[in-house]
Amino acid sequence: MKLIMVNKTKTAYLAMFIFLWSAWLTILPAKVQAQLTEDEKNTIEVIKRTQNSVVYVTNIQLVVDFFSWTEEKIPRGTGSGFIWDDQGHIITNYHVIEDGDIFNVTLPNQDQRQAKLVGKEPAKDIAVLKIEGGLKGLYPLKIGSSANLQVGQKVIAIGNPFGFDHTVTAGIVSALGRSMPGVGGVTIRDMIQTDASINPGNSGGPLLNSAGELIGMNTMIISPSGASSGIGFAIPVDTIKKIAPQIIKYGRVIRPDLGLTYLPDSYTRRLGIQGVVIYEVPAGSEAYKKGVRGLTRGRFGRILIQDIIKEVDGKKVNSFDDLYNLLDNYKIGDTITLTLERNGQKRKIQLTLVQSD
Figure 1: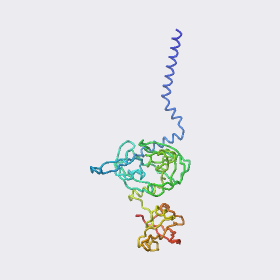
Figure 2: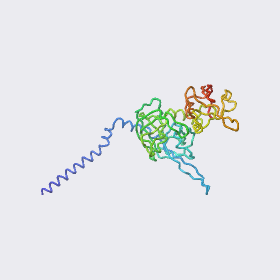
Figure 3: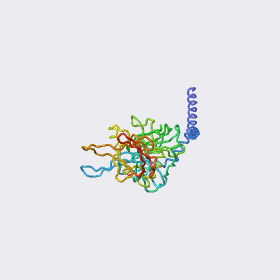
Figure 4: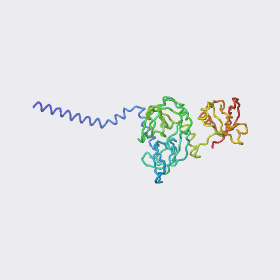
C-alpha cells in the first residue's frame, strides 16, 4: 500500500514538473529576447534592414558541342551581389561573372530573373548587372564610406557561401590598406581585411557596418584549404562609388592615361629593369613631340630599349602595377611630371593625361 502511495506521489510530482516545463517553454522566446545583448540586437536589426538587398548570382557559359554542334549551358560558378540603386543595377565581383554569357539572379523571395551585363572593370574586380521587371519588395543598400573606418570596428558580411543563400557572419575590421593581387592583372589596393567568415560564394556580397551601411564588397580570402580561415578581403565602398557610376553611364571605366603602350612586366623583370619600359609612342602625340620614344631596332635587327618610366610626380614606379595605381589618383586633363631614363640618363617632362582607350 505504501508503495502505491509513493508511486502516486511521484506521478503527481512528474505531472507538476511537465506542467511547469511547458509553461517555461511558452515564455522562453520572450526571455531569450530579453537576454539579447545590445550587440546581438544591433546585428539582428541590420539583417532585417538589408535582407531584401542581397541577391544570388549564377554565371552560365554557352558552349557549342564539337560533335553535335548544339549549344549547351555550362554553369561556371556562383556568387553574391547587392542592389545598388532603384534602377535595378546590381554590383558584384568581376570574377563572379567572368567568361559568362547568361547571368541568373535569384532574389530574396526566390524569384529568378535574367540579368544583363552593363559593364566591368577587371582591374578592380567590379562588375555591374541590371535586372528588369521592377524592384517591388527590393531595396538598394544604404551607401556608407570607407574613408574613416577603424581597425576593430564591427562588420557584418552577407552572401551565399557554397550556395547557402543569405548567410550572415560577423566580425571586425582586422586591418586597412591591404594590397592584394587582382584577377585583372594589377594589384587592388586599400582593401579592407576582416575576420568575418567569408567562403566561396560570398564574393560580390556586401560588407556592412553596424549602421547597416555598405562599406565594402567581399572579394577574396587567404586560405590553404579554400574555406574561411579568418582572413578575408573586401573592396572598399569608396572605390565602388568611383567605378560603378562610370560603368552605369558609359558601360566601362573612363581612366586617365598617358596614351602610350608598355612592355609587359614579365619581360621587364626578365631583363632586370626597375620601371616601365615604353613599347610604343603614337606619332604626333604630345609625348612624341616631346621626344619620348619606345622600342627601336638597331643594327642587325636588334631591339633597343629607349625610354623607361621611373617616377610620376616624384613617386617611384617599379612596375606597370605601380604606374596604373598612381594614375588612378588623377583625372583626365591633369598635367603630371614624368621622370624618364634612357641609356642611364634621367630627364623630366610634363605630359597631360588623356582618356584611356
